[in-house]
Length: 176
Image (cartoon, rainbow, N blue to C red; front, side, top):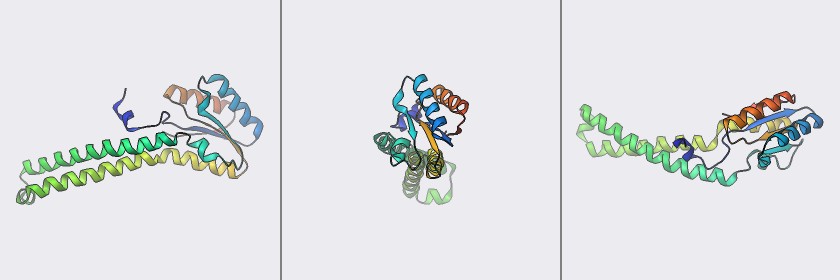
């Protein structure tokens, strides 16, 4: 298992969606996906002005909290270690300002490293790639369009889903 996956608490890291101009094409694509997919829980049909749009787009709210906690813990620690290593390099290089106050150099290296790690963890938790897809589906819903949203758990499942939605005539959107 990839060690980067330990940062995430969600099972599905990719979001694949498609917008459709009418109900018929959206429901056909929805049923085609449910027929092919052995995991039917990861597929949702979004109606125009759907009141449950947010829940359908992000059904793993507990997973998001786990991602937040895991990523901040691991990346904060990794940042601290990286900052300490950088401080050691600066001291070993003989930089006069660092040598004048080695304790402060090590402390600041650790603190700045933690900040950088926490910022990276925040970016991972926010998932701007998924936010773009969510915003486009929300806009389509507000303009009377239908959408099908899937939460694939593997790259292969994401590719198959994307192909089926394209064949169904939808405008496909995909996160990383």
